[in-house]
Amino acid sequence: MSIWRLRDGSADTAWLAGLVGAGAWQSTRWADGTGDVPALWIPAGVLCAWLLMRPRSTWPMACLVALAADAAGQVLAGTHLMPALLLAVCHLAEVLCIAVFMRRAIPDARDPRHWGHVGRVATVGTLAGCAISGLLALAVYRAFYGAATLETWLAWYGAHVLGMVIVGTTAWVVHVKGVGALVPPGRRVGFVLGMVLLVGGVGLAFRFRYPVLFLTYLPLLMVAFRYRFGGAAVGVSLFACIAVASTVAGHDPWTEVADPVWRTALLQLYLAGGCLITIPVVLAMAERDRLTARVRESEQRYRLLADFSGDLVVRLDASGERTYVSPSARDMLGWTPEEMLGTRWDLLHPDDREAQRQAMREVVASGLPQTHRYRVRHKRGHFVWTEVVMRAAPPDPTGSAVLILSGRDISKRVAAERALEASRADLQRLTMIDALTGIGNRRQLEQQLARAITGLGTERHAVALFFLDIDHFKGINDTHGHATGDGVIRAFAQRLQRQVGVAGLVVRLGGDEFVVLLEGDIGTTSATGIARKVLAAVRAPIRIGERMLTVTTSIGIAFAHAPASQDDLLSAADEALYKAKQKGRDRYEVVVIAATEGGARTGNAEPGHGREAGGTGSGVRWG
Image 1: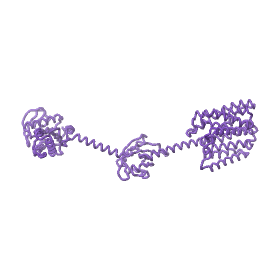
Image 2: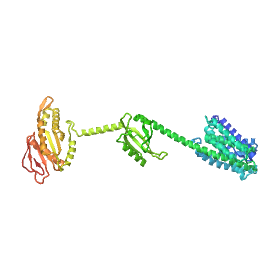
Image 3: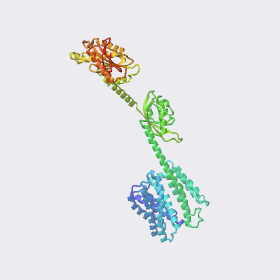
């Protein structure tokens, strides 16, 4: 747990006062060996990190406590009270400039998504805030020390920028992750050894009189790279403390430089170099880790969705080789994902394979998704209907096309669609069937007759239309009842169907009215032959329950081998039926519709034979 995360507010304030006061004292003490301006200012970074991690309502009290502690630390280190107070005000102005700027730009600095942005915002805020505080400090130094040169401002600026970067970064890391993050669990031995190597390297480098200080950057970069923010925070802090302490003690390569300001400047450049090679690397690594974590999280979410989705998810290349199959394959198809990997076109129904290949080519070429149905072989041998949405994914690292298929079992839907189609076909068929007799009805006659007459005028194609009804059928209904009448109609329809057979269409128009349609390579002889068979078959007694009834029928036949309309055929057949009834019933009459320029001949035909008689007509010939 972080030392700044104590629940007790007074303890939290006490920690702040102690750290700021100790930092001011140590920074001022270091100035005794390097000049009037400290080479590194510590407390500003501590206070800035504290403010960024607290609500703004706590800022006034924190600023007052920090101001008093800052001045007290300087006084204890040997600074007079008045300049100490004024310099503390300059320090506070610097911290407030940076804290307000960062809070406005980044409301929550703890969010890892903002850490890359934190570095940029903190850099801008630090450079601006330290410049402002340096200008204020120049007035203090002019008033009390008579030193207000550019070198003074540069020394101040460098000390405060470095202090904010080094100490502020360390304090921010402690606030965000806690002290435990500075020494990662499970890697503590390596962490400690890395810091020992860093401390020893920096200490030895400052003992040499040769310019080998650049070698200390290597262990500093190593601990930052291996331990990220914790390594960078601790490493840079140790690096800076040893460098400043060694310089104050006179163990530095620039002891030959007489001017303390320039010695301070060289030290600050050295510290800045360590910060520049460490902190940007850590920020970049943090951003990379964040992006890697996002990719991993996204991949885990995708894998979770794919693995536990009821749909089958398949990743394959343009050649059809499967590189990923979701576990739902086991439930849907019986295969394990491993069994379906590779190029296995044998799993697709032979009739669907080429369509699947063509769909893959089209998706790769256009980049647009497509939806298809095809059959996949189940491990048990039967085929499963699947509906697949195929999409193009980003190419793999080699540049090869990648396709993602998402499929689901639609076998039940296909079965339902087929059942519905069959029901529609049955319904369509029922609309063409007479409910009482099971033979065709008027609608079926209209369709078949319309088709039949389109062939009239072609070679060896003729149409014969029979109109029939049961003689004296009303008397049967009146005498024996409608149930008996329905039985007679059914028996009549069966006999009629048996005589006509598959050669023609038998239709009941309604009541006792029936129609027979013959077409094709027929003549009047074959038509009248069927009529005679019908007459003979109908005369046979009909048993209806306990009754034996004998009925007859009258037939009117319209015959056409030349183009004619439906109205011509219907009216001619109806007229022929009327003629048959006029001549005594139980017989047939034939009307031949012929496209002749002269008049027509009329005649009649007795059951079983025909004879012609002269007469007149318009466009028709009786025969």
